[in-house]
Length: 102
Image 1: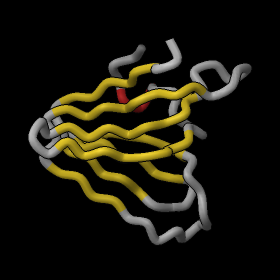
Image 2: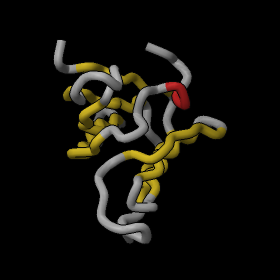
Image 3: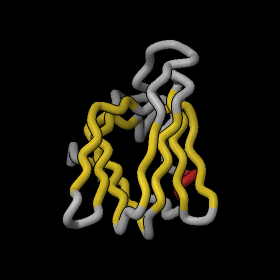
Image 4: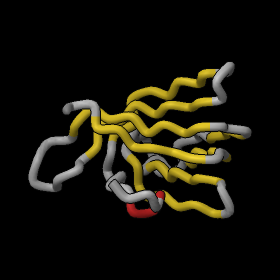
């Protein structure tokens, strides 16, 4: 798996839940990810470690959607733009994408 955030296969991934683990400064996004475009999406977790900031909007300017449109990183801040037009912003030290179907 790539260690570059922008290379993760998250376009069209479905966001199901977000957990914040306050004591460990961890944020977990529960997703269904298309690791192979010819196969079904699989349960996965995008885990952010040493989180110091988390913010998101849920205004739905482009309409209701739980799918990811695009992702990018700037100076240790990770952005996840949803197909609803909303954005999650996570400042942290590291991340990992874990395929839970294996």
